[in-house]
Length: 281
Ligand SMILES: Cc1cc2nc3c(=O)[nH]c(=O)nc-3n(C[C@H](O)[C@H](O)[C@H](O)COP(=O)(O)OP(=O)(O)OC[C@H]3O[C@@H](n4cnc5c(N)ncnc54)[C@H](O)[C@@H]3O)c2cc1C
Image (cartoon, rainbow, N blue to C red; front, side):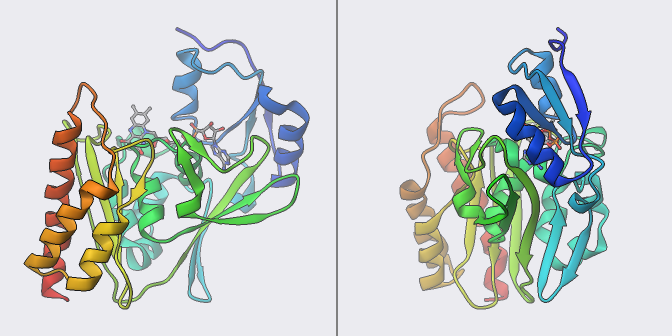
């Protein structure tokens, strides 16, 4: 199947993209890497009259570290994240997770901002943003605003962003000596996960355990995190955290896995990710 006909405009600035979105309303969509949007158009799941290409906007690009903060522009591609020494040094969780996102051809075009805005519950990067306590920088007709990752994802393919807003960048506070871990289970390399876990434990503070593919959006397992914070990554702490996952997660049934299997796998991943922390606890 082919996409319905649409007009195409290239925006030169975030302001221009916002103005075009405001003018065209629901009939316009932003185009970043196109790796989720174009399949949706080709399947006629979406039929916008106008695509606004944000790929040439200079202010949406780049990875920078300054003042204790890592800033990643919205149109930084998955491949750029994977190859970045700054990301490997300051957010190794992302480097590890990106290797699980699709295949090289898709990683060459897909972007961080596109993945977060798309809010696929089985995608790796929304969970990483939750685990890292990221801030999402947004611009729109009412001006810029900043939203914590944990307030950003509101449901299945849904975020707090209005249709006329642009995701501009992601900021992550540097967290030296943090422990982290990433695991996912999928049928084949490059497939979306059946269950996945991105985790981050700052030097001082409660761990953040972000699951994906076990509900309508990436989700923080808060009860399990408290159990770990109270008892440490000890066998007792991990057992308590595993038990607490029943309160944190609402896994779904689908042809890939039953809800019960997903909860079981979520516990397996918790052990795999958090177990090694006991040696650094
Ligand atoms: C075969 C295949 C396998 C894949 N496997 C995986 C996988 O295993 N894991 C995974 O996470 N992803 C996977 N993906 C999706 C891929 O990672 C996409 O690149 C990503 O989800 C969307 O990024 P994009 O830049 O391509 O966004 P686009 O497709 O261009 O846009 C996606 C949506 O986000 C909106 N949008 C984009 N950028 C912005 C912005 N800056 N501000 C506001 N709205 C914006 C668009 O309007 C659109 O609605 C796969 C894709 C394919 C085709």
